[in-house]
Amino acid sequence: MTVHAAVAATAWAAATDSASRRPLRLQVAGHAGQFHAAAPGTLHKHTNRVEARFYRDAQTGAACAAGLPAFLPAFRGIVVASDAVDGEAVGAPDGVVPRLDAPIGLAAGSAAGDASDDDAAQGPATIALADVLTAFLQPHVLDIKLGTVLWDRWATPAKRDRMQQQAAATTSAAVGLRICGMALSARLPLPSKGPAATKDGAVDAVDAVDAVVDDLLAQARLDPAAAAQLRPSLAQGVTLTRLPETPFSPSPCPPSLQVQWDKTLGRTLPAAALPAALEIFLAAATPAQRRALAARVSALQATLHQLPHLVCIGCSLLMIYDTAPEGPPCTLGDDHDHDHDHGDGGGGSGHAGSTPSLANAWLIDFAHSEVAGAPAYPADAAAAIRDGVHAGLAQLAAWILASS
View 1 (cartoon, rainbow, N blue to C red):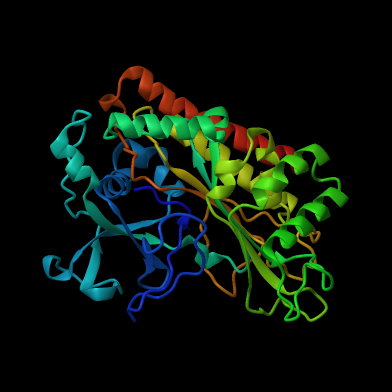
View 2: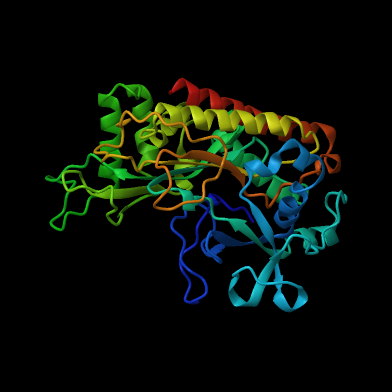
């Protein structure tokens, strides 16, 4: 049960009919309905016991000492029935409250392939996490899967073969990175006449993407050969919606739009075009935001180096930066001459009053990951899992810095 870009991180689910489950702002990847809004600033994620245990275990011991929680959405507990818990509810819907110490029912370090443990691992759990998107006004969001190994110790031989084939067929095996979802929220340089515009002013998503690529080519920020490789993938799994106007929406500028890609982008993207796709994501980022994201990625890699027993399989890095400026942006590729560095790792907590140059990244999606799971794997498999994640993070930081 893999989740991408929520919380964020941070995959965000559609609204349900329940009045206590409010709609989420954005979902760039993952399963619809897996997240819902709980108390203000809090998400409930419906996942499995492996992920619940990962978040719980990351709060103590070596993982906590190494600083791992600083790179995760803040963990607010495992959701259990309120009548089983002493204390005050934390604004959770449907009579449930989060607990940090709730039992999970999954034994640590059990042998791979144990049927009873497999049932426990895949059993349902609901966790409460901070909604990291609340600090951003007009966010660009990228969910990128880390690592070259995509199967966990509970995988059947058939699933292991399938996941190995998926890695080999995408950028995962070659680079240790694969885009799982991306959203751009900004004022795009879109045509007002011709085939790209309809009578009601709606713009085709592919035309919007072409406009972004053409704009970056005109600024010499994309290599023409890389752009040619990139365009077919950018046309896959893309949707475009108009966003509500904000105080940063003066009339001379084009309408604010959101262009969003699902996992199809990453599954069709050639490895050689991955840096160009990253440049599409970073198109509106200031130099300071790019440096902040690169520093955050490098700091995460350094933290993971301190945790040799940690197993990250199928986890993602969720990168977000704000494109709402102190003044009106008129193109996605404009740096706006704002060089404020707010990517120090603090998640931010504001809405309209927050500084709009914020940039940050979080490690998310742990349905196949364990804080101290390496001893349960053969030594060569554990090394391959670890090396693939580190290689992906190192390459990502290098690409971001090179684009600054």
